[in-house]
Image (cartoon, rainbow, N blue to C red; front, side, top):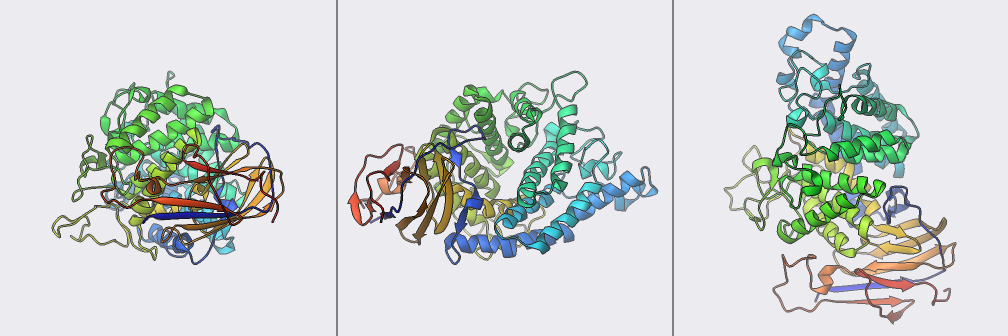
Length: 551
């Protein structure tokens, strides 16, 4: 029997209204407010990311030429036209694997910055500062920062061009690099209070705002690989400078309107006309998440309608049982409706991470537990499958079966690998895993949403007043969850406990999958030791503190 039980102890009572600066009606409780308990399921994984994955990624930035790229770009800026530009060692194509290699540095700094916010470390902080010296030296005078061109402007990386933005919609990744830089810079600023990285990122963002747009003299292009939209929205929230939000809106609005139209990069038609998930799965997930951010900040109902429709298409027709997406190896892409093969499934780890971003934003827009059901399934089965328990080996694709002949690694095996030439998945895990506690809780008005279940202690503001919870559980290994309200400096609030779809005989919020056995799922809730019952509201069991006396 699939058993799920929650035991709630109420110590006090509270009221208030949450402020959602992001524009979303529901607020994500910051990961810094949630301390995951050590020696637990998530405690072990966060520890592995902190002690193994992030240090490994930094070491790979050193050994795989990532830092060297910035150093060579800086040398060219300091010695324009130097003789080395015509020699093999300065031929970008010979040493830079991908035009987005710079992002391995940015993503690792982002993850390390999240670690700094919960585990202060002067040595790590100083190391990041030294890396930023290398990064900043590669920035051109007007803010442009893209080593694949700057190293050798006349002979840039093969995916780039000898003019800025000329290859952006194809493969240059100039705006993709901007997106990861901005995300990392925002995280670093929030962790350290230093504007060192933020200033670098803002200068590049300002360069983009000036040079990329619909006006005469600007390059009217959209990202070939999306993520800048999410990042620019985040930069607007952090700085209050609306030009960044306006640029994010342009990058979305002009898809399907520029010269390059391609379903692979979701640029075949305007975003508000898209109704199905097609093309490269990571690009798609990042774009849908960016649409949600911009929609929330601007109140754009057409964006919300589009991503609602696309979400239904994904979960109803293109969603693996593991929560993975992107069935096709060709283009790392979504397939047709119900094209979900097990043996040849691609299910890139980065695509699963992009789905977590999307599902969380769908919850923040609508407040329905079904989105967290999807988030949970993808998180446990599609994301962390990409990283070994010790944090030192990785999957890029995540197939569902193997016949011993269909292989996914360059050496002919299907085992996790210590790194990849295209290192987007390991470095993405660097930044995602430390931020996981931010997905546990949400708030709206006087409602506190318990979305994910993990042993933790959290101090959450409801109406400007602190409520401290302690959650004890061995989830996902068993379904018993105990929540205590340790401190309550307010008067009344509603605890909204998600009752997972899997205990209501609904594996996913669609008819795509169903249980084949005749086991009956069940759940029970007790408050202060007494069983209680309640109608579910959008998948949440509602417990009001008001009727219960102090313990």
